[in-house]
Length: 326
Image (cartoon, rainbow, N blue to C red; front, top):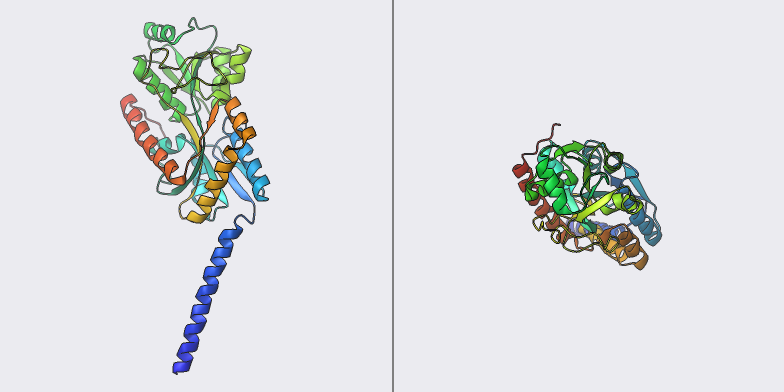
């Protein structure tokens, strides 16, 4: 009987060692099949080129295809829900921005933006540029504020989505300047910019990549940028602080997150590869030319950033009494 018991123990021990070894090999082999990066926004928007740039370099470096899967709709809820329901094995990653921590504060979502995901790595931070239709009789921030005060509620501004980071950032601008404007939400950045150019609305507070080409062609007039430093791609445009409005320091960011439960080994490997990609000279040059700043972080630093922005935008939502219908 004792010999039988010892034999069983040896078999169990061998099985455990094999399981541990198999797990270690699996971790070392990652990735060994295509990776899907879900983008909860439409193709052709400001986030899409970023996803494809990073995906291209991951494919080249890892030898596995990275598929960009656009899942727009529902203020980013549709794509985010698809990600949270995916297997936490490192083969489904979600590309998010500040909207990720805003939408659940305004709408009922089938996920918690922090608890149901694991932060992987930031990609970029981006200032916002206040641009107006050239027919608007303003060239400086102070002239713009004076006009808005003279016409309370008569200037219309666009945003990429009701309750998105652009919407809330523009409300912060309004609160800080003591002005009142009318919000016109759109389904994405492109149609809102088209309407500013066409004169249907007067202004938009947008990320640089979405408006730089129109600024350089003269279709849009830049007034000021958020953040502490001027953009290298638009050195002539002053910051809001330089223009006399120091209370608005907002940055949009984009990063990668995975479903909660994804192993830390995979997350760390992914984060390390993203850091190497963002350090490549050509990648940095491309991102900077688009008005972005490459942003390298650890998973823990990214997690802290999301939690801080969740609290920051909660204050703006309360101050501006912003409500969004499901």
